[in-house]
Image (cartoon, rainbow, N blue to C red; front, top):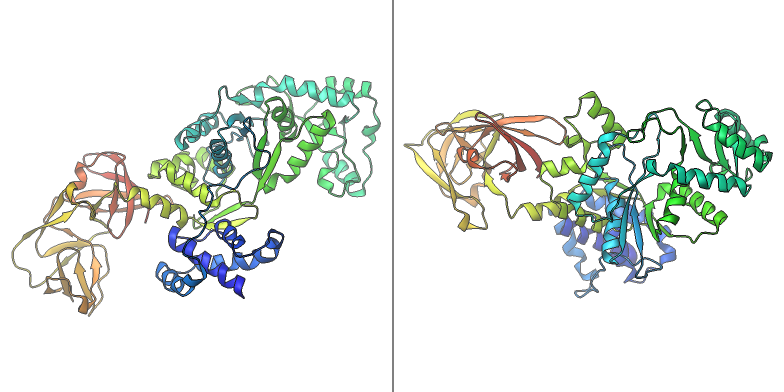
Length: 551
């Protein structure tokens, strides 16, 4: 009961401070209250449940409930470390980024790469960029534009890697040499089995008949493989066909593909699997530390198996749990985005629906916010869910300082307020916290454009102007007693500008903006009051096109 109370207290604290709770941030706090690391697995279901409950609360509900739990949290706590320490720390640490160039990096897969970069910065270590451009599959192909998109994304995030960039497609001959070494050691063989036949052998735990081929015969078949038909031959490593994990049994190291490669063209037909190329490159390039997802545990085991065959020193490998980001409206995927970019459904790789680094930049996100977001997640050992509002909250603190306030009325309709005589000029601060920035001025008569649907017998207040009810003037001063609902507005008499805003779902919201919007520059971030932050993406004489950032 005590631990449950502490979990809820820290989940609420995390949510209040950052807009959403994260399991990976709540868990370390519990160690200060006696939680033993061996008990993590036992408490994770309950902690995840509590975090999910807290994230479903409104901001007001969180604040209210947090006040009940404040006694649980000591006033003075040990300052939380930036990132947890890694093992085998030295002054000669080398990390690597190994993206597969099938498209732009998105907010999901950028997490692992940026985490590597953040640790490299922490330890003042080297970080290498190794493009994992093996041939891939029909469903997940490498693309020419992906290389520059990936480097562009890293540059925006401030990731500083060593030069030169390494490309797997330039290193095929190196992998071939090690394939021959494996065969000479009797650790690999050329297999002619079809996928179906080999699957049956695995299920029955029977050795492949080609396993018995001599070294000489395998080397001969290896040479023939370069002219063989696609799918007819493959090189397999000898693990054990009785291994407890069927997926680990004699895995493929090289296969034939006639697909054209964006860099190598059709120069090569025999391509290594990722784990084969990783094992060789991580050794030759001196990589000491690898951070990768839990989904690659099998590949890590395969890589270590190959290291052991050659007697190579193991790199220190850390696996991070998968992170599911909630509230984005769709599952993000490079291969899915690739299809939608090619088909023309997406505007390009920077379409907001792609959630790529390019799209986040175009929407107005700050790279510092992405970096802080990844730090907030940290090296999570368990799979976690995190609301996108956490990223919004971090970014909001950065853009709020620079964003001037303006009115934008979507789907405007006219309303006439009785009891208003004459016209007036309304002055409003461009930024509520910085009067030195000046004011914006709007003309006001008795006709206005609004986007809200008015209800009978409800008090409303046109922001910075007056109160009304049933379309009749009530009073000018702010009156807490009448509890008026705020409405932003534009005067029918003003020279309003046409505005459209591209939303996260790819749809446009049309409306009118106040006249001074015509004076702002492209790429300037503004806050449309009661609507959200947006960045001016394009500007013509008759239309201002904004991209929505977030609330």
